[in-house]
Amino acid sequence: MNNNVKTVLLLGGLTGLMLLIGSALGGRAGMIFAFIFAVVINMGAWWFSGSIALRLSGAKEVSPGEAPELHRMVEGLAQRANLPKPKVCIIQSPMPNAFATGRDPKNGAVAVTTGIMDLLNRDELAGVIAHELAHIKNRDTLISSVAATIAGAITMIADMVMWSMIFGGFGGDDEDNGMAGVVGGIFMIILAPIAALLIQMAISRSREFVADQGGAEILGDPMPLANALRKLESWSQGAHHAHVQDVKPAVSHLYIVPGMSGGLAGLFRTHPPTEQRVERLEALSRNAVIQKI
Image: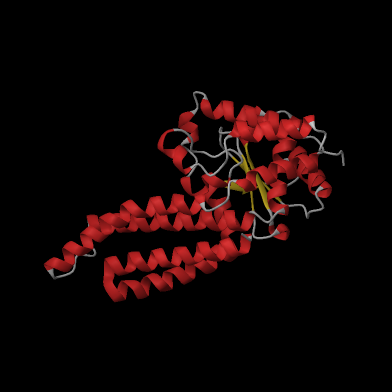
C-alpha cells in the first residue's frame, strides 16, 4: 500500500478514535470538541510531524562546527544517495540508536544518539546513517513521523482522561450519565495506549528490510550495517534496560533498533527480528548483489 494512502488512513483512524473518546466522555458536545481537536492534530501531524518527532526524542540540531565528522559523513552519504543533505541532530542518550524523519527528502533529518557514536566504529556508523537515508529516499519518514505524532496525541488524551476522572471532570449531574462517563473513561484509558501501539504496528515491518538493502547500496557494502545491527542488538539485550526504557513509546518505532523488546512489548514490535535483518545483509554480501558506487 502506498505510504501516502497509509498516512491518510492513520489520520482518519486518529479522527475516529478521538470522536469515540469525545462521545464517551462528553456526548455530542464532547464529540464536537474532539472533532475540532482532531483537525488541529491532523494538520500538525502532516506539516510538523518531523519537528514533533525530533522534539519528542530530545534531538537537537548541530552545526558543522559542533560535529564536523558527523556532518561530513552525512553529506557524503547523501550525495551518494542523490539526496539533499538532511539536518543533522544529536540526542544526548547513552542508548545507541538512530532515526530519520521529515515529510519529504527536502525536509529530512537524521538523528543519532551519543551512545551510538561511542559504540560503533566509523564504518558501522556510516552503515546506520545510510540505512536512515534510505528511509528518507523511500519516503518512509512521513508515515513514521505521523505515527509518532498520533501515538503521542493518543497518550496525551489518555493522560487527560485519567486526570479528568481523578478530579471528577466528566461525571455530570445525572447519576447514570456520570457512571457511564466513568466506565467510558476507564475503557479509554485502557484502549488509548493499545491503539497507539496498533497504529505504530500499521507501519509495515518490510520497510526495514528495504531500508537495510537501500542503505547497503548507498554505502556499497552490506557488512558494516550488519555488524552495527549485531552490536545494537547485543547492547539492547545486555544490562542496559534502564536506558532502553528512556525511549518514549511514541517514537520507539522510528529507531533503527526499537526501544521496546521482549515480554509483552515483543507483541507490538514494529521491526523484524534483528537476526533476520543480519541474515539478509549477509546473503547480499555472499551473493555479491551490492555493487560499489
